[in-house]
Structure formats: structure tokens, C-alpha cells
Image 1 (cartoon, rainbow, N blue to C red):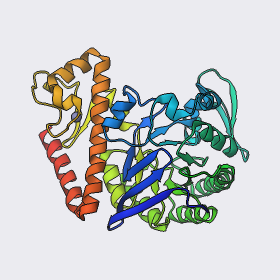
Image 2 (image 1 turned 180 degrees about the vertical axis):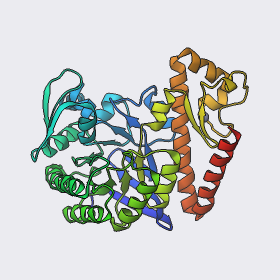
Image 3 (image 1 turned 30 degrees about the vertical axis):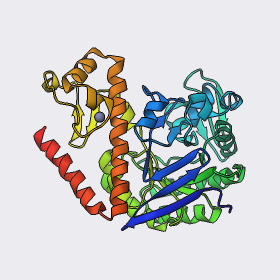
Image 4 (image 1 turned 90 degrees about the vertical axis):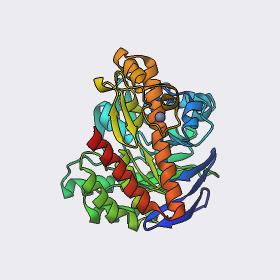
Length: 375
Ligand SMILES: [Zn+2]
């Protein structure tokens, strides 16, 4: 396999690592959090604002973009970076997960997933080959193999059947990927909550050979304890010299725990979605700005945060905007939440580099617990 994508681990503490990933559109310091840009935009944020939070890679959703405006159209307009004015790296998902969660009349067989659009009812067939072709048209720096996200709960037999299908699709995805410098394709480990299936999935993916490896099918209702147990069983089996991505995770405490277990990359809608529903993540835990106790509070949301919401406005004003349903509430709180997530990742990277990750993790949990006690 070619070494088209450079990934270098610079420091380790236990299983945790910090490093950098060099892609066609730039470098990404790891561990990294990827804001979700569902329909070619991180909702309520200008790309320059996303950049100002510290993010250097965002996630684009194949399912949404293939239906509207269409992958061929984005390709003809110069690719997703130019289309959305985001010059840094982009990872696209395969579309499979959202086909299963959003579309109607879907049917999975060996070929792929046949479905009808949730927008206009039009019929589509998403095969591994088509998913890779779409991600190529979008010009994704990181392409994801098409997989079936095994539902939770699933019996061992169901999880094994689903994982086997995902591994056959992984081989077809890898074969369809157009190799070029700075562009990567990641395989996705499945196997539900069954360690032996997870390790079997890793073996099959490594045999095929990918530039990076994702752990899929977690954060689907199994709970943090089970998720960490599966990571403990799965991550040590993954190649040391390739980036590892935990898909769809998660809450700040999930990310801290997964970094300690050797994960390098994350994505989640939580900071952006919460920013549109008056929920803010802070060093002292989650704050609901709709709560009346903020109505006369002159203090900033988080005194240690450098985002515009915290440096220029009071909790009382943010509360007022949320109560009025003002668009500015979504803008400021999304900015704050993304800044909080990026600061958390920067803190984790610095602590790994300094060899002080254990102190950082203890401090993180202490501050969150003190915030809960004060709330
Ligand atoms: Zn802030």
C-alpha cells in the first residue's frame, strides 16, 4: 500500500497519543475534533469562524450532499472545499448511516442500500462503489468506506452477519478508491458489543489495508461503560502507525476517556446542535441558558473562554437571546461550544506532549463535578 498520507505520533502517555496528520488540504493536530458540516455548512457559523475556534478539519455528510445539491454538481463547481469556502481538510462519511436513519423504504442487500430520498421520494442506490465515487466528486481529504452501522441491541448472530457484510463492502470500497497524494480512505471496525467480532473485523480490515481505521457502531445507546469496554478490546488491535477515529462521539467526558484509550479523531453534532438549543458546554459542565437563574447574571458564560460569547456578553444577555429565539443565540452558543471542544482537544494534546495527561483528566473530572455540585 502506498504511504500517500503521512501520520506521525509525536508523544504518548499510556495508550494515548498526540501527533499530526498531513492531508491534501493541510495538517491536522491530533487528537482532533471535527465539527459536523452536514449540508456543506457548519450550522450558524461562517467558515472563518469555524477556523477561529481552532478547528482544522470538518465532516461533510455524503447522504445530504448527494441528494441536494448532488455530488456531480458540487464536483462541477470545484469540489466541496471551494463550494463551502473551507480551505482546510474535509472528511466525508459514506452516507450509509444516514440512509438508515433518515431515508424511507430502504432495503439492504449484497449490492448496497436502495432507498428513497427523505426530501422528494426519489429512488437511489448507494453501493460501496457509488459512495466512494461521490466522496471523490466532493474532493474529500478522507473518504470513509461504506458500512452497515450494526443496530443496538443486536444478537451475536445479527452482529456477525452485519459485520461480515461491512467487511465485504470495505474491500469493494478500498478497490474503488482512487489513490493520490494527500488523500486517505479509512475502514470502519464493526462487530457490535462483541469483542471477538471486533477483533475479527480489525483483522479483516488490516488485511485489506487502509490509511486509517475508524471504530463504528458505538454511541448508539450502549452507554459509556460498554463503549469504553469495547474500545479497550478493539483499539490495541489497531495498527500503531495509523490514525484512529471514533465515529459520532461525543460528550466531553466520552472524548477524554477515548483519547486516554488511544483514539485520535472524533466528530459529533453535540456542540453545534446544543448551541441551537441553549445548551452550553463549559469547564464546569453543561449550562442551560434558558434557565431563569441567568436572567440578571452579569458574569460571562465561561470566564476562561476566549470566544466572542464569553468575552463580549453576559449570561443575562445570552439568556435573553435564547428566550427570544434570536438567531444570534445560535451563532454565539455554537461558536462557544465549538471553541470549548477545540480548547479541550488542545488541552489533551498539550497534556500528552508534556506527559501530564493523568493530571489533566483528573482536573477535568474535578471541575465538572464541582460544577454539578454548584448547579
Ligand atoms: Zn466561550
